[in-house]
Image 1 (cartoon, rainbow, N blue to C red):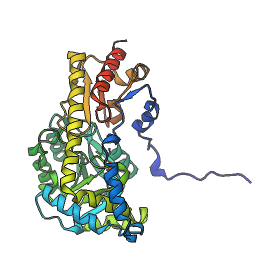
Image 2: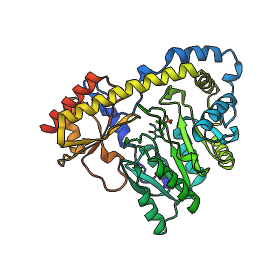
Image 3: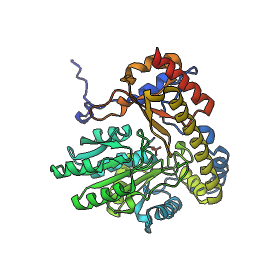
Image 4: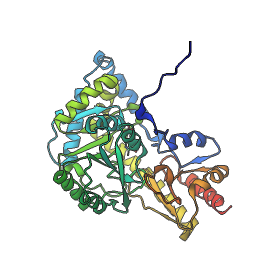
Length: 392
Ligand code: PMP
C-alpha cells in the first residue's frame, strides 16, 4: 500500500517563522548583551503584588471556572472605565472584549474583518506579529512608510486616490514597534476622517502608550471615530504572562469576535483577569508602579542614545525615544546590518536588522535596539561592542 502524506492548508504557503523569534534563539547566550528581544524587564514586574492579588482572588472558586468568552465581567468594567478616560467618550462594557494578549485580538480581528484577498495597509517597517496574522488571513498587504511623525498619511491618501480600497489599516500609533515614532495628532485625526470617508476599519494597536517618559501621549486615533478599533494589553505595564489584552470595538464586531473566540479557546483565564482587575483598580499603587517603569526605561533610553551618538557620531542616526521600548537606528555609511550581525554576535552584542521588519524594499542599513532589559552600564558596553564589530 502506498502512503500519501496529508497536506497542510494551502493558505499556509509562504508563511514564515518570525525572523526575530529565530534570531532570539541565537542571542540567548550569556556572553551576548541582547538588545534584540522586545521584552519588558522582568525585574520590574510586580511579582509580590500579583501573588497577593492571586491569593485574594483564589478565595472565590469562580476564578478557577470557565468564564464568559468576552471576558471576566469585573475586568471588562475596569477596562471600560480606563478606555473611556483615554478615548474621551463613555465606552460601554458591551464594546470591551478581553483577549489572550492583544496579539489574539489581532488574530481574531483578521478573521472577522478580512475576506481572502482583502487589502490591508500596514506600516513599513511593520510590527511583524501583525504581518504574520494578515498573511495567514490571506490578505493582500500594501505598506505605507513611516517618518518621524508616524505613518505617512499623505501616501495613504495617494493610495486611496489611486483607487485602492483597504478593508483595514493597521497602525502602531504610539511608540512604534520597531520604528520608535508616534503618530502626530493631526495625522491621527486625518486617518480617522479617511476611514469614515472611504469605509475602512483602522486597527489602532497600542500596547506601549502607557510607557511615556516625559509627557503623556496624544489622544488615541480611536477618539476621532468609532471605526477605529483599539487594542491594548497589560503586557508592558504588569506582565505578559497574565496574557490579558483587549479590543474596544462596536458591538457587532465584538459579537463576531465572540463567536471566533469560542472556537479558538472558549474563554480566557478568569484567574489572571481577576488579578489584573485588582491591580488596575488599585490606582495609587498602579500610578507609582507605572511611574517607576517610565523612569527606568527613560533613563535607559537616554543612556543608549547618548552612547550611540558619542560613539558613532555622524556614522549613525538614531531616533530620540519619548516612550516605549525601542530605538530605530540607521547607519549613514552603507553598513549592512544583516551582514554585520554575525560579527556583532561574536563581539557579544545582538540587535535586530531592520530587514526583519521591512515589508517592501528595505534600506539594509537600519536596526532596532531594545533598551528595556539592560542597565546604563550594560547599554554603554553594548554600544562599545557594536562599534568594535562595525569597525572590524
Ligand atoms: N502589538 C504590538 C505592536 C506589539 O509590539 C506586541 C508585542 N510586543 C503586541 C501587539 C502583542 O503583545 P501582547 O499580546 O502581549 O499584548
